[in-house]
Amino acid sequence: MIYDYIIVGSGVAGLNAARLLPKDKKVLILAKMLPWNSNTFWAQGGIAAAKNKDDVELHIKDTLEAGAFYNNYEAVKTLSENSLLVIDELIKSGMQFDKDKDGNLCYTKEAAHSTNRILHSNGDATGRELHLFLLKHISSQLISESTVCDILLRDGVCYGVSFFTKDGVQKIVYAHNTILASGGFGSIYKYHTNSTADSGEIQGLAVLKNLKLKDMQFTQFHPTVLKGTTFARKPLLSEALRGEGAFIVDENNRRFLFDYHKDAELAPRDVVSRSIYDYHKKTDQQIYLSFENFEKKAFKQRFPNIYANLKDLGYELPFEKVPISPAFHYSMGGIEVDLNAKVLNCKNLYAVGEVSCFGLHGANRLASNSLLEGLVFSKIAVETSLKDDFKIDLKNYTQKEILYTKTKPIDKNIKDSLRRIMWDSAGIIREKSELKKALEKVDEYLKEDIGRMLHLRLLCAKEVLSQALNMEKSLGAHFIKED
Image (cartoon, rainbow, N blue to C red; front, side, top):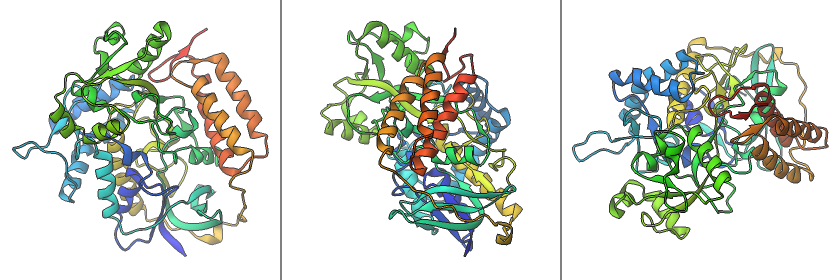
């Protein structure tokens, strides 16, 4: 059987692509874990979108400024101009966004935005509401707990993928079009806010298949993550909290961020994260997020999930400050694609969302542009693929199936070591000497008798380290101590 489409990933980009495809297409979605174990489901803040045509230019300007003007201008323009269309289509299809008492859409503000333009749903559950909406509106076959271990690529044509089932059996599926929407690689860091499914294996496959990875040195660290939990995925405290009045203080209740930037908590994420890191290192003081500007009833109504989750952990908001620290949040880099979301030099392979890169986010992503990116460019990928109507011919794919071992006993210790290495060497502030040591260690691990999936993670990590080392000047989220 040949599917019309294989979609790797079950977050916003993958599910929206499946939703928009004609119902007569045979579509297979491969989800690495259960479908709701994705960054989309956990997203709290909202969806950034131009409020109207007059706001498009300002949204473009804010995105470019946040990205340190390293962005691909045409990609940014495409994102913002299409934002009005995709939001309007979502609403007409039944997606519910929060409205005021007069029935108007509610927009909030987040860091580095010049105006209120963030749409939200059910308070602080935008990602979950969007994810559930998309799942409800797809009819595609979906296989959970399926881990892609190979891309079947020959002469610029993708014939499908090979994957491990939840029972560890390796299978091959073929398709006329393949859309990669597998997310980023936060799980290769010790401290992160990502789904544990996001561990960079598809980026590692890109290395093996000679698909270019672009801007991998630009990794964003979210400044306000709850400190002190034992969870692998650290609880995020949404940017919207600071946009609506929460602020960052030290043990003496001092708002020290004004020492670093005039916008304090509302400066770009890279600035806030580095400032917290630097201040803590200099003073050894604990850093907190304060909610004292909020009234309890309004806080519970606007941020019901954050309120409930932190209450379960013993915090009574908005009356208590909570300890925070930065953690890995997002990768601006990924598999290089053109403005149609097509992987370079490929005829029928697409990449959308965090796994992809065409320079949209530049050196640092503007808050809440990620869900919008998934919506806009999944739409463009679908439209392009339908127009191209490419068909594979299996007679042209003569590669014999290669059987891999998914995991080996040695893997766990190396994975734990890799997380520490990436946090220490490719974290918020980097040093060339530490990057070189990390690269040497990763190369050592790649020579070990390890499982296929760890091998792919290590290749992804190596690319992050290599590109960080090759960029000698600091820019945006990449901050390196210069000799």
